[in-house]
Image 1 (tube, protein in one colour):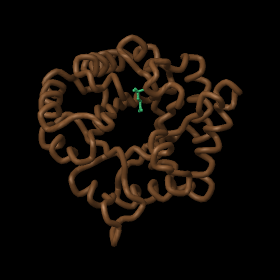
Image 2 (cartoon, rainbow, N blue to C red; image 1 turned 90 degrees about the vertical axis):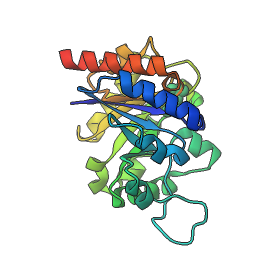
Image 3 (cartoon, helix red, strand yellow; image 1 turned 180 degrees about the horizontal axis):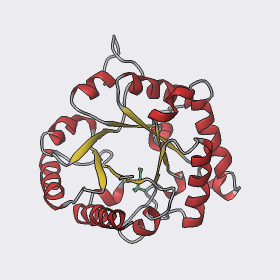
Image 4 (cartoon, protein in one colour; image 1 turned 120 degrees about the vertical axis):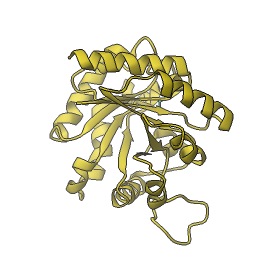
Length: 244
Ligand code: PGA
């Protein structure tokens, strides 16, 4: 199976830097054995899409409504219309700064499926929960809510396990911890969905993470903003996957 590498650019970049970075990435990446996707700020999705043939595009957000009187929002139909493939939903930064709860997240997942987009559900425990050894319990709670009444969304979803304490901190989860959570998630979802890892993935730790059997891809923030590092990660993943 092709590994999925997603760069989440969050609230960074402008026309000039995006053009420069995409052209450099496009020119240097090999994507025979992996899929590369980038999530720029939403306003640049279309611009980025027009600059690439090798990279798919991911939206950092979606509205829970598909159309109507919802000033300022962007719907799944609109994202689909400009060629978006994936949508990140439930990222811890949106849960924290935009107060997105499981109910809203479930609506957004449903809206993206209706618009024929692939939702990427982000889950993960915070520092305190990690210290209290509650990681599995928290992740299970976050997926259980989604799956409870919606068994049919199982095969349309991708999960990104992103421990909150590892996001943007330079402190990635250990391989043992990643395997523990990913193995659990694979089992709970009957090995039907892709599970990505995210949280301080960088040029030195990515290799050990991506070679794990139940790690289907990476969601990369900080290190995806450095084009040279991002290209290096992609090309190495492409090479390792080929040899397997
Ligand atoms: P990070 O961000 O790689 O900077 O930790 C990951 C994410 O937020 O998806």
